Length: 308
Length: 308
Image (cartoon, rainbow over all chains, first blue to last red; front, side, top):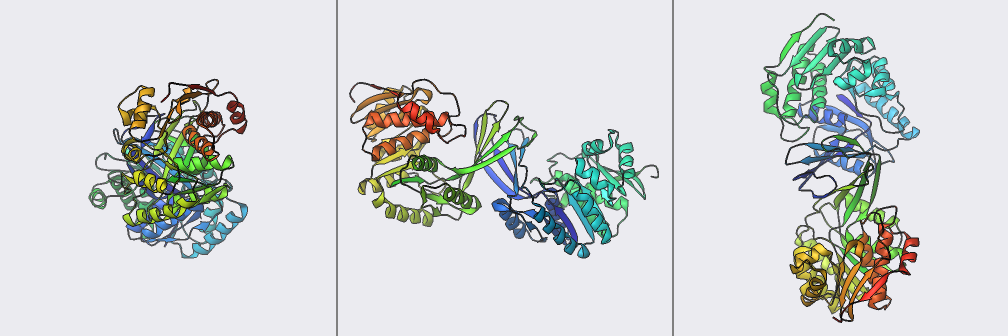
């Protein structure tokens, strides 16, 4: 199975309002809830692709309970979340139906105690022997040590499981130094890590900091990958209009799904780009449209760069 | 005891953000939750005043469970809520800390089935014999008949319990026709009921539609009451700055608390105005500041109008 780690899981709540007017009262016309946090999004896409997937991380309080119930209702993801005393955070997306724009409010997440962190490490160690690949995704909740991802990368490497790390800031900096197989920053995260806003040199610089492969998301322009096998740019045949929420998580799922199938880098990138495009194009944020996935898969343009 | 009815209870969530910028992502710096819906607010204020109070209405799903747990944690309110299969709504208040302004998002509330409505009516009938007064507060959740408040007013009258009705729109229009003891509209609700924006004639018109007494909230200008004993205007000694959230619910609690103590109309109005002022002045929205309450109680100006 593929193991996804979401230390700061969330209940993603979406409120639809006819028109957002700051400092007024709004009648919410539509409410949807789903399990959130990058790693749970990745797990859901992997399950939809037919991959066996187990999700761990923390879940606690009434919102944690809802996250677990929603996870159980959507088949294909094995729940290996570790309970915590604090309450799982909510993220609220307010969608203004007059413009389609989204305003986002993210709660900070529960305080994790040292005993809870130790319980998680134990659970993670139990799960690693069965993992063909590991995804470490998203922010760290309060109380989890900032070097957490470095610890988790090393444990996975010791167990022989390749790791994809998708986080930002200091958690990314520390995690990269532990030499994960893949990191997948976006342009802003990469600039924060390397100090450079020029994607190609910055992507290569990130490899020198420890990541075996760096796949940088360029938004609508696709993915730029610097790997031991070479450098590639992979782009959709045409820019797709839609909601980019979750497109990065779908790319992570595409990379991992292809990796465990033993596919080479160009094919991994094709799947990642096609899944991203199919997510942007889906009617529901964070889901992917299977028809768009199949269509785009056949027409992603992969350009080889200089040998890396 | 005083019985408060909140058919559309809520979990009131407050998010504090440094600055609200539509169409961007916000890190929420503070999260608070409390039981909401007008009747639960009234119950909490009554409990703080030392009145015995029982709260009924509907609660369901994970948010309903949180409402009941928070209600149990704040002593003084007896929980007689009736379970429903749907999920109790959330209301979200986003407070912009740079200006103090609040942007509100209100979910619609659970669908109530005919069987659930029948179960509520049975519970209400069991509670009425012990009630010295009844407060019927707030909006109706989907599925509850629009004439619900008229049914509840008549049942309370048959049991000999005076009723205060605090709602709006068609639910108010139908409820008034069943002749409640008191209604407490604000100026907008009163205008919707009577078609007149002139508070004194509109307040008197509302009496002719069936309410024994009409207490109209004039915001910072206090209360205007048309009653069988006379007409009064009651105002705080000076306008108070602060957050008006919950001031109307505190006024309802003040009227009922004074009513069950057998106090006359001028004294009821003094308490209602002083509690409203103490709520506007409290550091936390919807709570009241006991010192302000005691201070303002001694200085509310009650002016008698023409005999009504």
